[in-house]
Length: 235
Image (cartoon, rainbow, N blue to C red; front, side, top):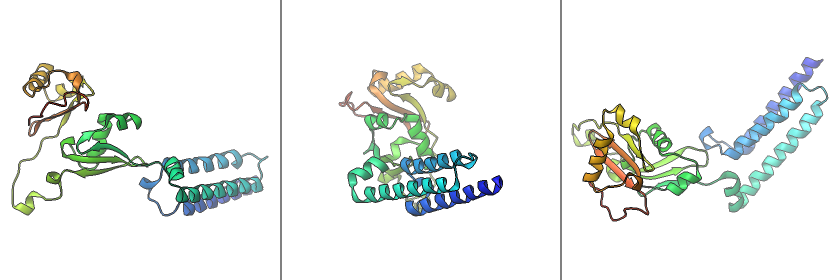
C-alpha cells in the first residue's frame, strides 16, 4: 500500500511539473529566468516533504500543487500586464560593455569579474575585448555580443586572403592590479609590462581598469573612465 501511495505522489508531482512547464511557455533552458528556477525549487520542496511522509496525504499534495500552479499562473499574467512587475520578477538585460568601454558599475552590480566576462566571451568565440562593441548580460545569465564592424562576418576566404593566425590575448591588468601569473605564463616580466605601458603614456597601474596583450596585436588598454581621459591609446 505504501508503495502505491509513493507512486501516486510521484505521478501527481510529474503532472504538476508538466503543467507548470506549459504555463511558462515554450522556453529554452537559456531563456529560463532566476524566478522561473524558483518555481521548480518550490515544487521540489513540496514533493520532497510529502513523498515519504505518511502524514501527508495525496490530496494534500494535490492541493499544494494546484495552489502553487495557480499562483505561478497569476504571477506570469501580472508580469505580462505590468512592465514594473516584469522587471521585478524577470529582470532586464545589463549593458556590461557599451561602445567598447567596460561599465565597472554594472559589473559590480552583477557581481562580475573581468576574467568571468572574458570566459563568457570565449564561449561565444570572441577571444579579445578589442573586438567587442556592446555586451549584454541577459536575465538568464547568458550574454549577447555585438562586435565592431571590422570584426564582423566578412571572412578572409571571401576576399581571397591568407592572413596570419591571431595569437590569444592574456589578461595582464585587472582593476589596477598586475596579473603576474599570466605574465609568467608567456615568459614576460613585470618590468617589461611597466616599460610597455610607459611607452603608451600610462604611468600608473592603478589608473588602468583593463589591460590585455597578445603577440600579434600587442597591448589593448582601458583606463578607468574617470581617470586619464586625456590619454590617447596607441596601438
